[in-house]
Length: 468
Image 1: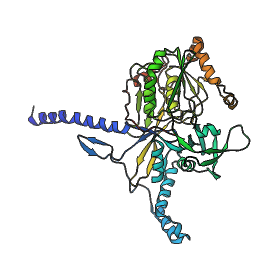
Image 2 (image 1 turned 120 degrees about the vertical axis):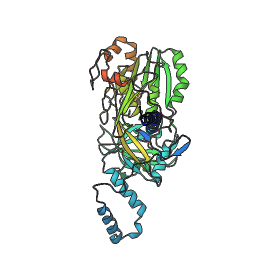
Image 3 (image 1 turned 180 degrees about the horizontal axis):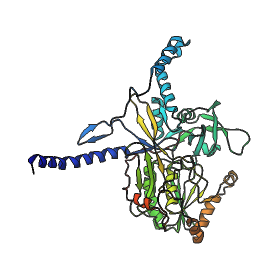
Image 4 (image 1 turned 90 degrees about the horizontal axis):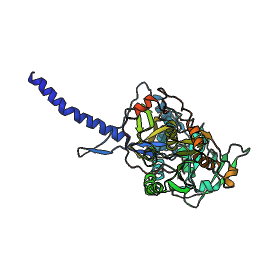
């Protein structure tokens, strides 16, 4: 063999492992960190400078197009110049605000309520909201059908104590209509110092007239998990899939295991979401090497299947999961996996329907762009975006039940776990088929293939907190 061919083979032998390592490292950086937006969305965080390679600090380049193809920007500059030349109140013109306004308009043209531009002050508010503590009312909000909607008030929060409910349409904030108001604009108006009041006018299903709710702001600190043993059943309430969830869960895991529960009731009602990573790690205790969620996006690394690890403390214990219309994002991911794998029974109300992933991209002046980059699907390929997870059995807790301290959803969960035949009957129907043929154990052949994908690992991210 000629010497040059041997040299080429030798060089390829050296280079290919290095290229494979670099590619894997970049992919890991892209998918390593998930953070929640204040609306309970599953969010990835992109850093401008976020790593080292072989001891050298590197910058991951952001894609920039200073001169987009097939776009004539002369009209923009024409409007800008005519405004400066003719607008009467010149002293009111602020070039920085004009620029931010143009950026907001560009982003709003996507008509995606989860894709937003945040100026530096809004970006700072966003960072504070996921830092572990803030002052506000304690409710998660989102845009649905061009209306500002309450996803869920947090348990024990000023919002819940004042009577705000999941599904309420916030019509006015301190007298200002919320029509065409972005989520971040609403957040900025609802938040404020502890002890000060904010007035919300809400429209509620079943009520003929708007309801005025005055809430006193307070410091919001959210405990992710509470649990108790009741009649041989472990009841675990998860308020959000935050950074501290796994620390809290692992602290009580030995106690739950030693109690040897006959069943588990997992309460995800009014759980507005949080970290995808937290939901996956929590799922490790309930699933054995099962795909928990798949993602589908445009860019390399935004699509794939994420699965649980081997074994788990509760994989053999009967499970009932409770959801309502305040259950969103990461809580829907978990409930969807329970349904698709027939791991347990989901009861309650149809969930909120938040099935997209946002990437927060920091910009040069301290502002940021939150942009939808992917959609998540259940293991069998079901999209719940704007549809939600439909429970295996519908059970509603009315306001009258709440006021009288009654919980028919919890009562039904206990009935199901106390009656193995009822549990099996609810588990018997096959899930809707996606891609692939349903097998005898209720999974699809392609889903089984996906389950060979490695479990996703993520770095620790700040705790998810609500918008206000």
